[in-house]
Image (tube, rainbow, N blue to C red; front, side, top):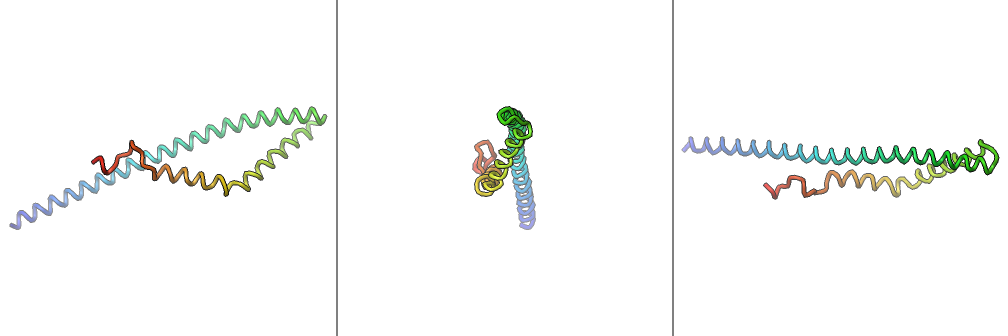
Length: 125
């Protein structure tokens, strides 16, 4: 009788240990997938931002030279464009908390807590 109990507890211990190891592996895999997805989005946004920066920079030069031609002064033409950029910056700073902050937080949270059909799920085991 005692030998059966020892076997039972040994088998139960091994099953619990295997289950715990499998759950930890599952958590690691899911974390790696979500981290990779978030990293992919960050890299995408970074590259898009760099391209947008260069496009805006050259459009700013074009606009500055246009205003310089109309105002007959490079200084005033570039000052007008600098003023436009400062105005856009101030507008962004005012509207950041209202519109952008929550959207960024929601995007990051969504990546970590969404249920993808590709993720390993408990129901599939």
